[in-house]
Amino acid sequence: MKSAMKFFRRSKSSQPKPPKNIPQDDFERSKYRQYNSHLNNYYHYAETARVFAPWLELPTPILERIFSFVCPHTQDESYETCEQSALVDACMLCDLRDLSHAGQVCKSWRATAVKLMYHSIRIDSVHYCAREIDLSEKRKRTSRFDRNGVPEDTASARLHLLCRSLRDDPTRLGILVQYLKTPYMLRESKTSALARTIAVLPNLHYVDLPEGLYSDDPAYHTLRLEVQARCPHLRKMTYTSGSERSLEALSTGNIWPNLEVLELAKINMDPAILRHALTMLRRLRALKVSDCRVFDDDMFKYNDVLPAFPALEELILIDTPRVTSDGLVAYLSREDTQRQLKVLSLSNTGVGPTALHNVLAHASSLTTLSITEQVDSAFPSYSGPVPPLVNWSLQTLRFEITPSPSTPPYASITAGYYSYLASSLFAGGLPRLSAVYVRDENFADSLLGLPPPMPGFAGDRQRPSSSSSAGMFSMGNGGLSPSGTGGYGNAPPRFSSNNPFAAAINPSHGGGMLSLNQTLEVFTKGEDDLDWGSIRMDPFDAYGGMNNRSRSHNRSSTLGRPLSSYGLADVGPGWQAGGGARRGSAAQGNSAGSFLAVPGGMAGHGRKGSVASSSGAKEDLWPRPSSSYGAKKGDRDLWR
Image 1 (tube, helix red, strand yellow):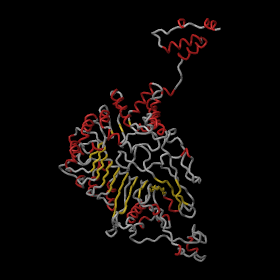
Image 2 (cartoon, helix red, strand yellow):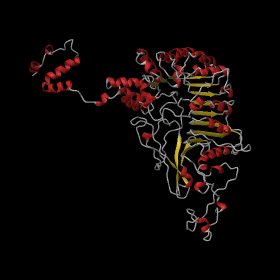
Image 3 (cartoon, helix red, strand yellow):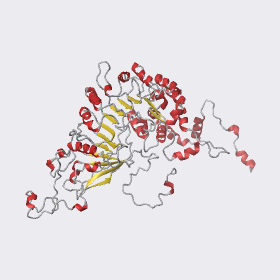
Image 4 (spheres, one colour):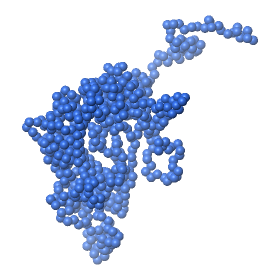
């Protein structure tokens, strides 16, 4: 039997060998076709025919738009740090992996994907999804004698890989990078790797730098020179205490002439030199000044010798007590400043709430105003009536007045300030206002226009109207009692001559009730609250839903607290939706004329299919009672 099998066995020398000039894959393909000759016609058609795939021929702008939904953080063009610009409900590393896989489909997709991947780069230390649990175990360098292992510094490894890729091809990849964001610990410890990476990025607009560079620390002197020489198109820079000499160098016009955002903190230098340095920045759009004693009213006023203060779109002043309303009014008296200024934030400055009406009267293009003050005295009413707040362009107002720590806890000195704000809203001087932030949790109740409730021992407001006096109150209706009163007459509220609410009454509605002139979303936060509560007020809320008809008002806004467009503070629009926790609710009128706060819908920001937001289900507003044991074991958070 063995001899017979040897006869049929093919010798090794008889088997064909692939020629040296033919690749191994082509040889195997031709060998397969030799033994399957009936499939030759099929292979000929597959090689010569053209497959219809319209998605492979999409225009570049449409393909970039599609890829921006696959990896949203590639569109991040904000001047915020890596920690502040992170998406709330997404895993940036997984999104970047999906985009890189899409770039491997064909050459046209690869060119578009590479352009997006290197436009805005961010390095994250961990995955913000469930994959991090498994990956963290695989990264540990375990051995036979060390089962725990040493965790790997993933952020540092990713920075070294990025540096190698950019330095290997700086002409095609380095010119694409405009935004580079790194974690705090990485940019503080790996300055050498960061400097070698920045050296091949000539078109860089924003980069996260270590804190010591902003204060002219000698340890970061080489890195500063590298940034000044290699990144001339930088858009944002910060100067803190100790960097006055570097700030003075801006007056030459040769260092970062395209700066758009500038932060000054604890700067102590000659105001004339500082004003001259700011004037040399022709593209300056936003300025943040904090704890600078040299900033006063003379900085904004006209001077024959010094150049004019630059016209800004966003001005933020923090802990500058020498800046008063006189300086801002002088600054806003210029036509270019009135046209440019959109965002103004005042925190612990010399501009008090009583002088805020002077600033608003001159800011004709202002859209966002924020004032944060700690007061130790009540609202001044002895010096005469204060004019209400009037501005025809204001859309968002943050009126956060809190008592100073030195005041007694039950003094209630902030009630007069919020009453002044309520009277300004009733007067209709802010017609385009859509959102207001206050630090009084009962402020929304004062906007309903209803009189305060009577205590239980006080009895009824009026005695029931009799049939003999029904004609006196029916006003020709022919009924036995006034319409909608149920036999009881509600007297209109009475105001004294010096009450600020008396001028805001609209007599055409009858009843002497106060009302708003526009839909307003009120965000309130008490002293013991951790997040912001939201209530949406409509003009007809004060009348119980128009003749006591029930009307609900659902939330239409899903944005969080307003964020700055230049990454300075939470006072303006940002690159992403979200950025502040708050409780959503709406005001709903019922048949009794009262109001009920009901939860409002919140839309998620996560991308469908992402690990962090793969559930896709909306939050249950009225959840069913669950067991006290909690959720099942697989759904529990392993870190709590």
